[in-house]
Image (cartoon, rainbow over all chains, first blue to last red; front, side, top):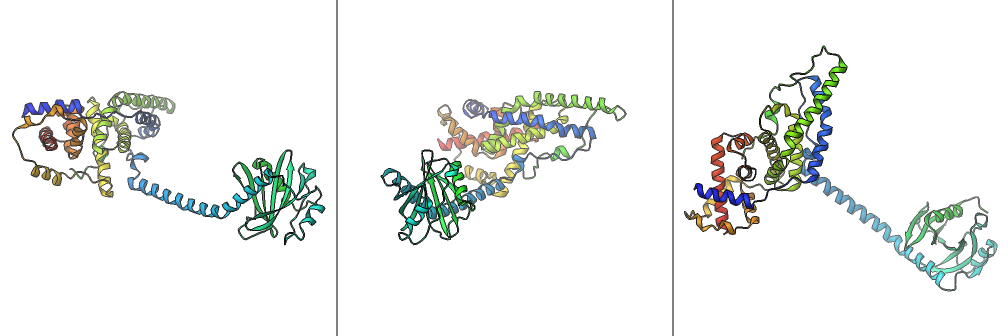
Length: 230
Length: 213
């Protein structure tokens, strides 16, 4: 028997795995030792009465709690994701339509139906073409020129499109009567590289879109929503 | 399997010969503090010198007992912290069996927690070894076993299937090459028990390997 034991011993020595401590373990133990000396110094000073050793959090944290937390996090993320996707889903089609309309307006030689920087020309132009009167603002003083207005068709209804220009950037502002889902405060997003803003003012909802960055669009939206403007 | 092992109780429950050579209360605060500071630094250094060389052994034991990397790291980390706290206990002895004993206790506490939460089904010694013995015909011809042809993975598997108290003596004896005396110290059982466990562990292992052959 002894001989077989030796044989088995040799085999285990030669072939069984001897695990080596990972470097991260070595590092964290070293770090632990550096921090662990302070409470121990305290204990030493006060004499023999020592508190029970505290367990390190990582090891004493019950395994099931880890699992539970991980599971809870997973559920929370899924629920949030579903919520956002749902919320997004409603607007997403609309945003796509806004982007498409914006792109089309730039591709075709049909940016404006009425070309004027005068709101008193642009606003009356819509009368009789659509069943609402879109508010039109001149922002020339802020360096944003009104190019004109256009009739467009978004979300199965005719809408008013105002065209502004900042430097060489074209900004489309689509306006039509608001629905309850339109946000009161402007919301900004980036779709296919375009900055998009959506908000509600009075009975109208507004969508502004441009290839300017979100910050610049933010400025435009602030000017458009300013009540004291003429 | 010992169900009553709770980590560290054997240490906390006894009075510690703490602070011999400590400055007395009559000394000035500043010098006492300074002295203490040095003592703490020395203590950390002494501990590092004594314990860190055995980190691989500690991890190997924990990894074999817990059978997963993450728990093994947690256990070793906790064990080292615990060992650091009770370092005064180590007086002129070899640090290795003492340290491995703490690692082992920490692992058993974790295994016990696992069993309570039903997270892993641990090898049941009563049930599973009987099963093995019942199904394996004892052949008095161990030469049959072509040990040299055995693959490492299968050997590892067989060791993992041993009950923890058999697995640990195999790991300590064959992989860490502890003496019987040191194993007795680590596992906290008499020398005779170590020898019988080791012999039974080898027999079980041989049976499993033969069966798998």
